[in-house]
Length: 367
Image (cartoon, rainbow, N blue to C red; front, top):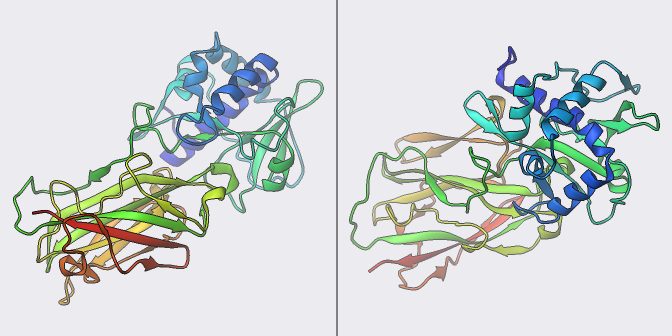
């Protein structure tokens, strides 16, 4: 829908949404709607999709379009701005409609949102500064549109200290909704398995029992960490069970750090052996990497290499993150015999311990 590459276009969508919100933010009734919807935490965090607001606010798309047209060429820039990107803003009704309701960005549909950091300690009755939630910033400092007394806008630097003491609306891309803009219960997804359901003797299922995160690996702009994993089960030098992933199987906020958090169906599915289609068989081993999931920008694609056997067999699994992973295992480290033979869920006697996280697994033998 533009001449930008995928990443630049994504930033252009965010910038357009932020500038489009300026005129709406001046209205106390709109601010009340935003704050009420955010406190519902539809996806478990302090945010709301613009497409949700558009169903509550008449003529929202057109108001945003007029806001963009009014302000895009009349912006006052503060000195020493850290990361302001003056991308072309989108101005047609069709473009603004997609910015609000879901924008096709290469192979993904992205959904814009308003997120309020530190919502419990700032004055919700004040005029918000609208932070442009670019996903690729240095030191978690972003530009923000500050509404002046005369109604015009000035771009200022917004950092964590500012957001702790002032009402900030971070306009960004939601990382938890699917391609249709809906939050689904987290599940384990097969990535590239070529095998179907098979019958195995003496099979075992393995899942995450609990996790303790020490470093959220997500700056104040982005809310809770979406802790995810990719994994693989292998038989010798062959990949027998396929790759699998648990996307956002638990969300971690600042208040959740340094605590054991139980993984349950209510807050995510932590299976690591493709339950129920491909549980571990006596000849198989398990490997995985635990990481903080980010929006799938091409430049954020990361690779984790699993060694599948002593002779040098390996396979690469890919995921999207701006950070180093919390930790991971190799294929040869945890195999069928390492897991319990009990017919009830039993915690593994060994837990993983990394610099940024601890992890406990549990297993059950299926008779």
